[in-house]
Length: 302
Image (cartoon, rainbow, N blue to C red):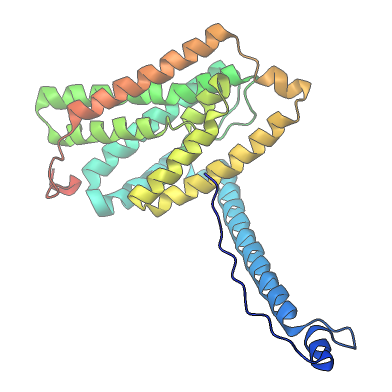
């Protein structure tokens, strides 16, 4: 629907010629103060936005550089970063829950590692980042979008299996600790299926429908305004940068890009079936393992 804007009209006043000229023109050709002020304000706003953009760019460049350096630092390998993460999570949830939580993250990441090796792609061992999860660094991109989808979905598939085993043992031993661990694992694997890169769901969408990257990005923004979690902002900005980069690459319509995203209808349906099936299983798993039914419960008290 079109919007109308009221026009404010000032009463017309008649001025002597000399006075009128002095108010509208400067004989020396200098800009009027009002125009100079408007230009100055626009300049300050542009400078502030440019400075803010530079800060964000440097921040994410530092994060990316740190992630790339992790595999090269022997003391901060898988075991070292895992111990650091356990210590960090223990401050809030206790060491038993923290240990189980990091182990379930490891299972998820090993799904990616196993599939990467099957695709013939060299990758680092899992590296843990406290309060941000874990990551596996690929030495190169997969051959095509279908291979990328297989790698992306392998993590949630193995992570879902790990959560299900945790829940089964929890039910057999009547352990609320294991039920809580299973619930969080189901939840995190479900979050990873948000259809935006670099999440696993975004990699699946590379083979199904890359346009859904923008839907996933919008969902992340909506989740941020609902949860007000500052960590979500990091993923939103990373997702926006990666989505922009990959979408611009697709718009070049090069032969290389066309070959990468060429996936047969049959394989699109197979990826879609696994993707939707995982969502259903993870949602059911969360329903079956939920034990924190009141605000008085905490992981530390389980």
